[in-house]
Image 1 (cartoon, rainbow, N blue to C red):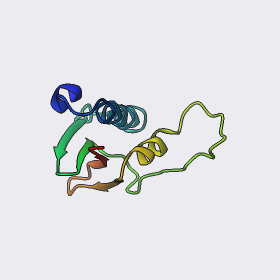
Image 2: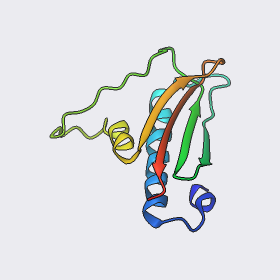
Image 3: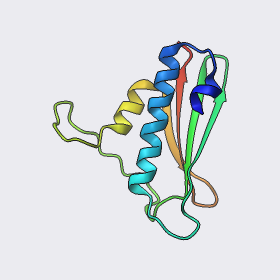
Length: 112
């Protein structure tokens, strides 16, 4: 669906946007506890003159602060690189909680 929303943009931007979305949604699947009314994730895409903003919104976790521990560049671990990858592709990225305690993770990707 994200590819369709982006239409005929630069193929590198389309690839990077899909990669960022996959990483962020994977984090939701791996780290957000399951439960009643917690089986959802929302992906939003917005555009500006010089960037696109990708947001992934989830039900949140019991931890108010995100737990981000960057890996050493030479690490051989099989997982844990997702947010570092997002940060390397984005010109800006961040996270916050909504009033309803839902987690929003966003990344701005340059048009080129």
